[in-house]
Structure formats: C-alpha cells, structure tokens
Length: 259
Length: 248
Image (cartoon, rainbow over all chains, first blue to last red; front, side, top):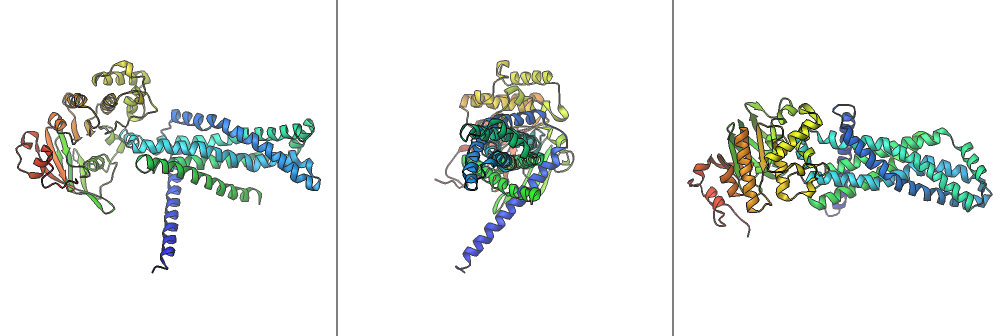
C-alpha cells in the first residue's frame, strides 16, 4: 500500500487538475454566453479598456523596444556565421509580428492585468461586495467578468500592433546605429518581406491571449479563498495559469496557422 | 411573511443547518442570536439565494423563493452587510443609488443622485459625503452609507448582518436607533443577525436563538428575559458556564 501512495497522489492531482480545467472551461462558456445578452455595462467596459489597454502601453512598448533591438543583434551575430547578415530586417519583422510581439505582449499583460483583476475581484469576494452585487439584482459574472474579458480581447491585439511597430523600430535603431545598416534599405527590406498574414496572425494570437488573461484573472478572483492569503493565492494562480495558457495557445495557434 | 420549514445545509461534513423552522411575520423585526458558527449568516444567505439549501422550503408571502423572477424577488430586499460591502471604486452616492442606476428600477442620473442624497440625509450624513469614496469614511459612516444603500429602493424586507460589529458603543446605539426608526417608518419586515444584546433589545420585536443548526428558542422580545431555556439564559447574560460549550 505504501508503494501505491505516490501513484494515488498522482491520480488525485491529475483529477484535481482536470476538474479545475473543467471549471475554467465552464466559466469561459458562461462568460461567452453573456457577451451578447443585455444588460451591457458600458461604463465598466470603458474603464476596463483604459486599465487593460491604455495603461499597459508603456510596459508593452518598452518590452517590444528592447526585444526588437536584442533580436537584431542576435540575428546579426547568428547570420554572420553563414554570411546572412542581410536577413536582419526581415527576421526581426517576422519574429516580432508572428511570435515575440503577441507572446511577450500577452505575458506582460498577464503579469500586469491578470494579477490586478484577480486581486480586485478576490478582494471584492472576501469583503462580500460580490454578495452585495447579487442582492442588488446584478449578476457578478456579467458585471465584473464580461466587460473585462471583452475589453482585454479587443485591447491586447491593439497593444500587439503597437508593440510590433515599436519592436521593428527597435530593430531598425540597432541595425542602423550599431550594425551600420542603411536606414532606407533596412526599412525597404522590412516592407518587402513582411506579409499581411504575418501581422494578422499575430493580432489574432493577441486577441486569444487577451481573452485568456482576463478570463484567468476573473476566474481565480471569483474563486478566491478567504482572507489576504486567499487573495494572494488567487493572484498568483491567475498569473501562472494565464502565462501557461498563453504558451499553450501560442503553440496551438502556430500549428493551426503555419504548419 | 417569511417562512422557513426544515431548512438544512451542509458544507462537506460540516452540518450547519439541521432543520431550521422559523416564521417572520410581515412588518415585524426578527433578530436572530446565537454563537459563532451556528448558521445565522447561512440562514440569511439561504433566504436571499446566495446559498442553496440542501433541503426544506423557504417562502416569501407564500411563494417559494427558489422559483419565479429572481430580479423581481431581489428587488423586494435590501441588505446591510457586516463589513458594509461598499464598492470602493464608486463614490458614496453611486453606491447608495446602485440599484437605481441599472435594471428595472433605473432612473435618470440626476434623480438617482437626488434620491441617494435624501437617503444619506435619512441616515444622518450630509450631502458633502456624496462625492467621497468609501475609503475616505470612518467605519461608522460606512455603516450608515451601507444602510442608506439598503433602503434606497424602499424594500419590503431588510436584512442586517451584524450591524454594529466594529463600532464603538455610542455609534452602535446610533445605528440601532436608525435601524429601528427606519424599519418602523417604512413598515418593512426586518431580519437582523447579531451578537450584540443592546442591538437585540433596541431592534427586535421577536427573537430567535439558533443553536446546533436548529432554532432553539423563539418568541417576543418581551419574553426573552423570562424564558427558562438555559441556552438563551447563558447567551443573553454572556456566561461562560452553561450548556453552550465554550473554548477557553
């Protein structure tokens, strides 16, 4: 029996994980089910749009700027091994738009937004504000989760688009000022090689990541445990699950779009 | 009239309610007393539908609370939460007028604000408080705002969950008096959960004591002191010795 204990523990953990995934899927379904059904909370939606989109711009922009620059240096150094330094503009642009822009943008939003949503809703739960919403004839899922999820799904692609542009400009700045590329030639090379689908696939990924980030923030916030420890655990779980789901969704979408 | 018949509720192995039978006559003020963890809050949440009972029936004016139009049902209730449960992202007047700004009771913004200010005045707060955020208020003021929110839509039934917890004796007295006045003035049915015996004496028409997941004793406030029930006697006199076990 003692030898079977680890197996039993593994089984319990697997069942708990699957049950948790099931609850998340049901929660996501419930949120989607309310998106097009009135009442619509426009004020909460606008507030979420500013919090998630506008206020995340600096962190996403800075991340993209430094990533674009580092990418240019790496591709130049790697490309030099087989005399392919000229591919720097194209690879920076494709790398930023298809992968790094949406994934790093999504992760930065996960760190900033999933945590704040989970902490805010978790605190509302432990201070009975969610019960108060119910007694005031307001569906907490519709009032708290739907505006945030819709706002994140719309805002993150816009953040990704801005991040892509800043990342490409970061690559351009390093290419021109550090690697002695001709400015006009760098930009022409970028324009010639970049296809519309490179950009749109990244924006679709951004929308999916935004949905997952806000969903995880809301799910863990609404299922927060009691007290400060419960809210802390919910916040941590929101960031971790959003980050893992971003990587998993990124792989699945890349398979779907490019395999 | 609110009636509970055989209401049970368990959380895992913890059997909180074991068959609660209770009648709260229309327009009366019922106060539920009992030790911590005896199921007072769960009883209240079962009536509101925040917690689903495992068995039993709860009716409001003869209609099962679990059926029918939920929004219309909740519109008949107001509730003062233990910690206030004010929405800290909203200004005081927006908290008070929350129900008046959305749903079936929606009113124009200016009218909703006017009603909120009138309700604030009713609980002893001036209009200058209306534009503050809850975090800028003292505990007593937050309780008053929460009370104003509970009565904003003129509900038929008002629940008070530990209305004086965390307040000094003077502020507790003020809140107790306000509750009594408002309930009488509105003709509402009131149900209060409290440990505070001064609240019981100030607010109650009827008292029910919960113990072991059941109603141990219920009767008019005038009969509470004279009841021979040892559980009630121990509780109202705050004795450590008696049938109610206490950890020391």
